[in-house]
Length: 218
Image (cartoon, rainbow, N blue to C red):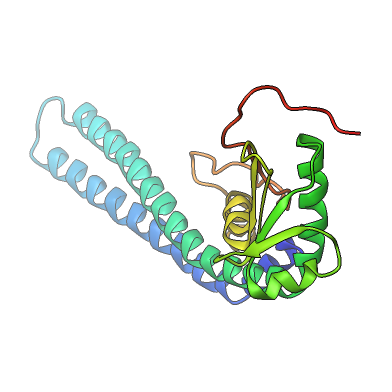
């Protein structure tokens, strides 16, 4: 199941909470603007010579301030809601990854490693993931984290394909998807939250150290 599918499936009930968040921000704006109008009327009643201009200025400033404050409240509330729902998406994505995607992750990680290093990788894997390595001819050792860590024999290259690393790599894309799906149809705040990026399952390679030139094997 893709990250997009997971997001859409689990956020169906959360959209009602999203509508309440937007309503609370709008109510706050209406309240602040209402107080500004009362203040403007009070100035008019006091009979100042420049009361009309002063009242108009105060009302305009209050309205602008209210919009800024309400927008800040809206963005803060949306951000908190997004982070809360994001955790649920990532928890399901993690379970889906462990259950159905580890074989594909292993294959793509080995291919990526071989593009960066001509030798065969040494692979550290947890007990469950190690079962996928049997009969493949890789040098293997016990790992502590779910997934795989591939490294070269001389230690010049290390590629982290653990579940934690992959989920962290997908989190930014997932955050955009959660926000877009959660607040679909509510419109952005005045500071745009941006368009969501599509999630990618590409495993980031991280060369940790290099010593000399890498030879090119056949």
